[in-house]
Image: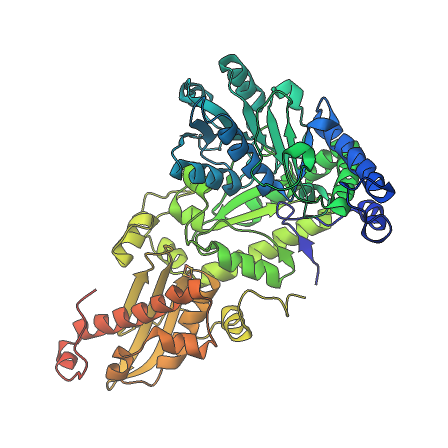
Length: 421
Length: 142
Ligand code: FES
């Protein structure tokens, strides 16, 4: 059986050259970078080199603006809480986009319980944040605007440069979560005027266990993890040296190969979506069409009349690894908040599947996925009462309405006595 | 690899991959369709009832793997049971027969119990004469 890994948004395999570079730092050069002897100074030098590689990837002015954490989630926590606490006396208001990653949303919710307020800026049906709404949300009390570069769920590329202009005009620091874009799209913190940027190297063939936070020298930030004076006093705790070294190599390769990676995945993205659209009826692409508004690696689709977990399981049994934002897949039994924010019908959110491509994905892989997925959908529709009821005109399609029958949501409410939401 | 690392245990996976009694019954005597308020999924069970016994059962499910497996297992378990016995059917029986479900997935088996009961109620509604013979009082109409 062919194995096709289409969950690069969750994790990527480590680059062999990154792995090689990491090896001596487990055994030979094991020193603690805070130590003052030869062993410590040797690895301190390696951290500095990795900082330079990270700075180059995102066009940061100086490697001293790069901080290492344990992963992207910690970086996001530090960015949000660190800025909020540092500016507590100035104001206690934050502005975020409604479709941020949970590491941002949940950090904000934590602060809200402690007296901060937050405005969540809405998005349009393709997930683009509403710039005017963002501008209007900023008040004299606002101490941080947080937006994502690319949406982790539906691949929408946000107008970050415009957000940057608004923020500098209003004098509010901007934090950009680049978790879903670093290594896959050009990032220019200077051009954006970003005060903070975070990302995880394991999304672009680096190791897990390391996160990056860029902080412009002018941005005020306090530590949220206390202990020693590592990372310029912004993040206590011994650095994960081997991972940081591997991450540096991954960043360098990502910068070198960026254009080729984009071209390769874009071609496959178009082929995959065209194939699915042609061979699977009643399927919808969530987020913008492949093009300048969508990252080249992500496809987020909704297959009508069937649920997402079943699709995910059958994909897995056929060697295809995908993700889903269906409520059945989440531990909270709620659909992805991103799908809710773009106003996707519950019936379609339930049928959600997310496929993310990588540099090793091939044309043959994509063709196999199209064929296999079409079979899977057919099998699940054969089991679905909704498909049958659609055929009989009892319920209507959301994707291609026929004008016959009631909506899925109405039907779901009728049989469960409660609304589907 | 996928044989060793699956989301559910092997019984659940088997019922998900090879569902028993999937489909509809022509001339069903009772049909129940219910939705899960928790996740929004939908399950439908059709029954063939003869001489007070469930002769045959079929299901259709719009739902997760555990919902499909639960409906497959539930239809297996209730075949041959009397209406009274079926009225006392609980989701726990499905969970046990499936060798357990993850805690967050228990409601999927509840959906199977509810779909079965809705089908029985539909039957009793259509055959009021059977209601008086029941030992189990009919639950409040769904
Ligand atoms: S039926 Fe929705 S989680 Fe199982």
